[in-house]
Length: 90
Image 1 (tube, helix red, strand yellow):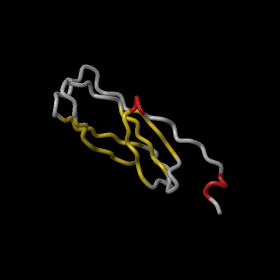
Image 2: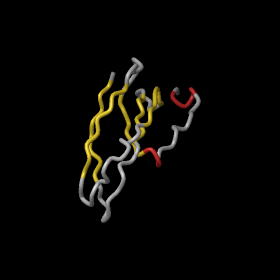
Image 3: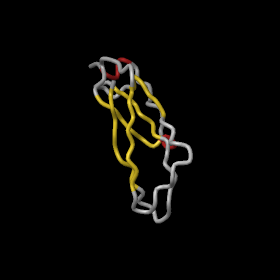
Image 4: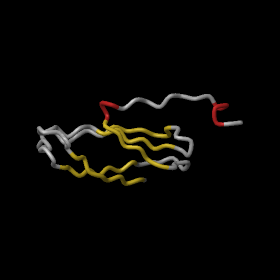
């Protein structure tokens, strides 16, 4: 399992809702091995201007080839572009 924690900072001049996050576990080539979307707690207070909200998330059943995790805001997430095996070989 991998435990991921961080902070979401509101850099806007107005309050924002807590956004959903997209968590990807990737191998050393950047290929996605597992991906999950978090859902904000229903009814969570908005993040005020200049404010921040901490988050903690656990990814269970992590593939053994995991190299790192990538966290993005879910509405802006795009699935990784599939590349042929020859792309990684000379």
